[in-house]
Image (cartoon, rainbow, N blue to C red):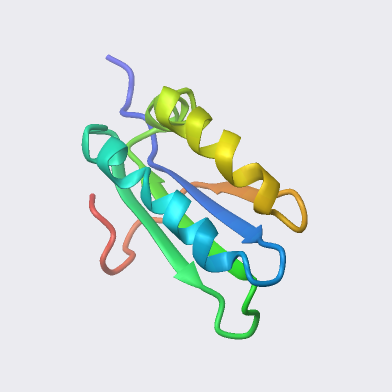
Length: 108
């Protein structure tokens, strides 16, 4: 029997054109009903950058890489990126990680 796959985290930095951040957050929020249907999506949260009025950070946590792939391949995310892409000031920066055990607040 193979060991369980490790959780996968994703950190995304989205920089929007001046004045477009709120519209970007509205479009990001359209993904919330989709992620509710994804059992492998454990955390999906948006954060306004306190020092940059054009930037949003997204933190995502998945049960494993397969769950991230299922989310990333969904029709809903494709549709959302089709609408939000024109609002970016620069391409989104994405960093994948693996949570270290013993963190406070992360689902196990």
